[in-house]
Structures are given as C-alpha cells and as structure tokens.
Length: 233
Image 1: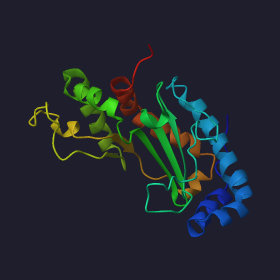
Image 2: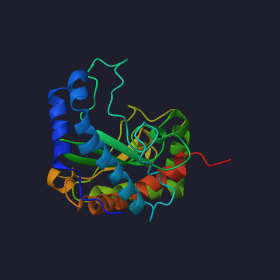
Image 3: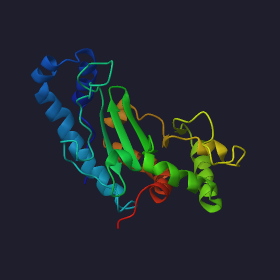
Image 4: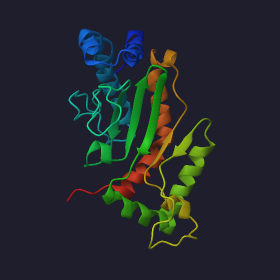
C-alpha cells in the first residue's frame, strides 16, 4: 500500500487543539479531526503495518479507532491527573507484538504532534509480570550479552537514544556488582531515533523512513518479545 503522507491540515489541527483544548472547540471541529487526521492515520497504520510484516510477521497493525487497535484514543483519562484538559495534543499508536495487551507488550510506537513525529521501539514500562523474566534474561550470559550489544549498537546511530525509568538501586536478590547491574535497574526499556520533521511527515517519504528506523530498532523489540512476553498455551 502507498501512503502520500499526512495532510498539512491534520498537523495544523493538532497545533490548534493545543490552543483550544476544550470539548466545545473539538466538537465544532470534529469533522476536521476525522478527515485530516483520523482517516489518514488509519491509512498510515495499514501501509506501515504491511511493510513491518515483511520482517515482523507477528506484529499487530489494526486500523480500528475505538482504542482496541493500533491507534490510541485522543481523549485523555483525567480521573487521576491534575491536568484536566480533555484531549491529547498528539495522535499516537502502537504496533505491538505478542498475545498480550498492546500497552503491556513490546511494540513499535509512533506519536504525531505539531512539531513532527516521534518513533519508539521497546516497552515504556514493564508490567509486573515482565520484570522477573527481564532481569533473568539480563543476567543470563548469552541473553544479557546480546542485549548489551544491541544497546551499544543503537547508541552509535546518529541521533538515537536509549531510555527508560530506573530504580535507584539494583533489585534485591541480584548482585549489585554484576557486570550488567545497570540494566537490572530498568523499569522499562526503549529506543527512539531523531524526531521526523513535519515536511517529511506530510510527504510520501514517511513510510520508508519509519520502516528504516523500525528495522534499526527491531533487535531491541525482538529481544524484549523473546524475554518478557508470555507464550501461547
């Protein structure tokens, strides 16, 4: 499938939403959201998903817009947040891997905002059931060395960053002086490339560039998929 890029009007909608983040404004401009952002995002998911399936056959690329597919809802859950603005000022999605929930699975992530598009691969936050398998894999001689090599390679790519929240100390039961003790402190682990500029987001180059970045980050995503996700019974 081909994808011509996101409409300029869709990026402009996100910029306007940041200035008018209220339900009345959104309701009055919902047709713009639908036609210039949501529908193009569905086409983007299908086009990119088709390309990802060539080297990630188990990745989920689902164009549904109800929150169960790749696309995240644009509405915010404000119940436990001090920020009561009702809408996110970005459009995001997860191409996830595995049989679990998309937000608890290793994934390729995109986030479109007025300033451009950010990509990510990995797990932003490990679910509780993934922490022990992750740590066991880190201290495993073969798996742990493989992860360290992957992270080193990513760190050498121009503009790429490896990140994740960390505990202050190495978890109990593990040697604080272990060769990979720093990796044991991660609460989540992900990589991201430089932000994709708006002019590229709005062009037919976007899919090729996303595929190239996701291919570069795929070893991390695949390592996490093998180490941290359940297998079908």
